[in-house]
Amino acid sequence: MTKRPFLGWFVTPAGLIAIGIAASFLAILQYSLRAHVPGMLDPGGFTFDNFTTLLKPAYGKAFITTVLLCFWTALFTLLIGYPLAFAMLRTRSGWVRGAMLIITLTPLFLGEVVRTYSWIIVLGNQGFLNSALLGLGLIDEPISFMFTTMGVVIALVHFTLPIVVIMLAAAIAHIDRKLEQAAFSLGAGRVRVFLTVTLPLSVPGIVAASSTAFAWTFSAFATPQMIGGGQVVTISTLVYQVGFASFNFPLAASLSLAGLLFTIAVLSIFNLGMRRIERQGAY
Amino acid sequence: MNCTPLDHLLTWSGRILVALILGFVLLPFVVVLIASFNHSSILTFPPQDWSLRWYAHAFEYDDFADGVKNSLIIAAFGSTLALVAGTGFAYVLNRYEFRGKATLHAVLMSSLVIPNFTIGLGLLILAASVSIPRSMGLLVFLHITIVLPFVVRSVYVSLQNFERQLEAAAESLGAAPRRVLFTITLPLLLPGLAAGWLFAAILSFNEFTASLFLVNQRTQTLPVAMYNYVREYADPTLAAVSVIYVVAVAAMLILAHIFFRLEKVLNVD
Image (tube, rainbow over all chains, first blue to last red; front, side, top):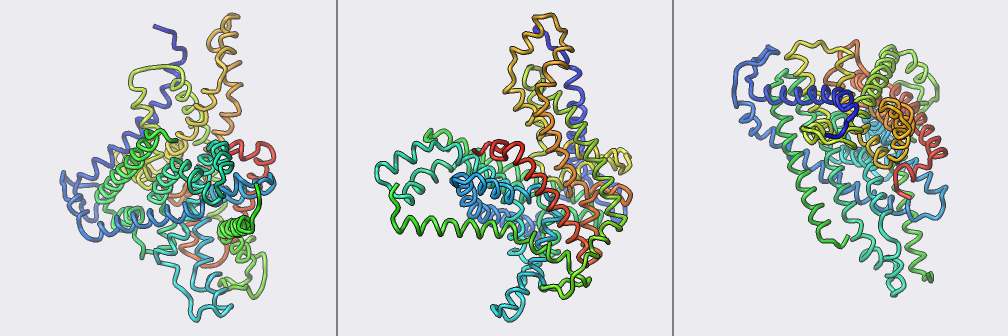
């Protein structure tokens, strides 16, 4: 056997943390199979009722709302993130690139609460956007952004944009510029080079960025809670509400478990797609 | 490359598009800046009168002061302990094979995939079922589990780029494993360790969702105190707090850019 100095010393702290993580996961699993006793915090006996409750339309609707939010957010984030990442890499001025990086990254290091609050001031009925549009005479009465899916999507796009831009920029940066130059030298125009060389070669980055955008949106809580205001019910806001408004922790546990299984399923599909793209070898 | 009128049109429409996107990113921060100087407690655009009273109120409000204190304590302990555990784990991950390695890795990295509200709920239920009080210690543990994957990744990357010959040289000169670790390995890993720790501390300072499940009145963190403030009051105090936050983060990033070049840090150059 080879010498492995420090193995025990180095694994033990990580092992203890892993035990804590595994135990809290088992706690969710255990609670999801226990009955809720109204008025009591301690759960009752063994039951599958929580999972049959999840089949009720209200819970199904939260799943659909969450999936739609994830879809729209990922789509719009990619649509505005790609040009930003592209411009960031192709600008010749280091000063412009630095400014773009700093502007793009700043929201990443602000908490969800600060960002969401800022959007409330922008989107509210007496907020900046409505006041500006009313003042310019473009609309006659305020547009409702608050408590709507559109409002939540706008704020979530802003929330997911930095990480998506970083991932796309990393993918575009690793494309061999010689391939583009070859296409140019053969007489292709800029649009054609972009559509037939650059864009296809950045597909792996686009897939990876979409899967991250999905995971971030799925776990977002402050944005749907504060901008959705109870009108846009997602899995995250529902788990919190079931737990802290009804104190039905067994149901909250089964709902999070269902959400977790769903996340794992979706991320596996993304992974599968990634592997298939990589196997095609063109990249 | 020859430039046709179409090329000019493309270049300029591209520039306008990117400017609009950057405008979208900046819009909420500009609006929050204007709102923070609004004098009346009801926000209107444009503000009728200007004042600094909300900044003064933000500094006087006890929940924010307590929140900053709690968040700093939790971030300091959480990211330091995560650094100790994460560095050790990244080291064995990089160098050794042992039974259960893959499982341990999967469990420790799982918080990257598990939504934060599930992590918070799980630890809350666990603490309740074994009668652990909702204390600062519990919050520190929560934050360790959330930031650990980032520390492990950062240190692991540094270890991959590590020149093992330097350790071999020290060993061949008769240094004991412990001496090699403390005089060669750790000092050379220092930049990776520092980057991992800083990122973990920022992440921890900003963590909101999972903490919301575990705080009580006494242990509430700054993000939770801010969230509770928005739910109770409509005045622009939080706009003032947000401006301070944005300025601090932007200043930090500008410094990071000057010293390290962000495009290098992010591997996008």
